[in-house]
Amino acid sequence: MGGLSPERDVSLETGKAVFEAMQHKGLNALAIDVDEHITRVLTDRKVDLAFIALHGTYGEDGAIQGLLDYLKIPYTGSGLLASAVAFNKVMSKKLFQHHGIPTPEFQVLCKGQGEFQRSLDLPVVVKPSDQGSSIGVSIVREDAHWHEAVEKAFAHSSEVLVEKYIEGKLLAISMCGDRPLPIVHIIPRSGFYDYEAKYTPGKTQYICPADISDGEARQCEDTAARVCRVLKAKGVPRVDVILDSQGIPHVLEMNTIPGMTPTSLLPMAAKQAGIGFADLVVKILKHAQLDYPG
Image (cartoon, rainbow, N blue to C red; front, side, top):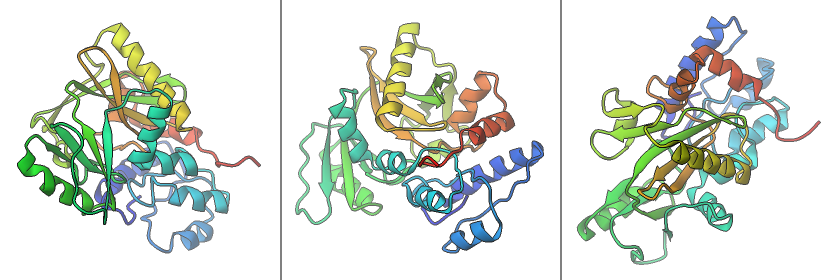
């Protein structure tokens, strides 16, 4: 938990909750705040299995997964390749397009390419290609705010994703193996699900199960399952979509290490399915594996 990314504080919250759940279950657990000495800590403490509660860079992008594969320590969540591809929003969206999975229209901006011209009609969503927790994300509804939003995103990444804004319901579909958990409808009171709305109690309303038709729910679940297959996800990932007025779920991204904080979506969905927090932690642990056979 912890680590070196901008999402360090959220990761510490997730890690603390997971660690306490493991202790409650009587497991021989050790909480590790990750720094540049992580390799030595893992070997010195003779860790048998790693629960990855690291959000963001070095935790979700395949870096820690590759290290754990090298050290032959089974870990929770997806492997190196799936983690790296899912963490990069541009690469994952290109795969969604290739496989016919609905996703908002987009363009890519790269640092150093000169003046940044917008090719999509407003409104658009501007975000760094490789950050989580809505860090550096803006909704642009007027031309006057375009360059400010682009600069804000570039402050966190050398590559920026610009997406067509889709009007609809923001839904989160968590998968427990092949089984979808109840869908969560996210309604930020500000109208924008930013960092503050995500992590400040009372800033967002959550409805679980989502108030959608059975047909829409099946469409969302099928889409989430396709995303997980295409990106080779493992464990308990979460797929975020916008369900438009036509009942089409437009995929935004897949999160390989969903948050486990008091306001997080995965524990909320699991609770609705009758799975308590500590039992959810154990279920995630039971999915732990190496990315390579043998």
